Length: 74
Image (tube, rainbow, N blue to C red; front, side):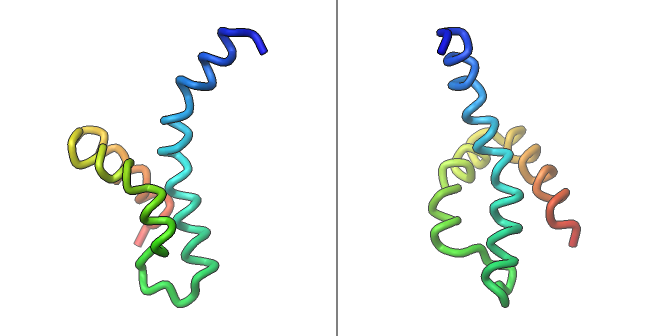
């Protein structure tokens, strides 16, 4: 693999991690019926760094909340 492609993948990893939150939570709700709107403990643990970042960077937290509303319109 060429170095510039490797660096591109590394640079996109945080974005892909954040974008995976919506589908992962939706899949967790489908698998764990009745979910009562609470994600499983494993999922909460996996996305805890994203939650931490959203709390410390309010603009990023607001963008993440807006993105998750696309997955959960209720």
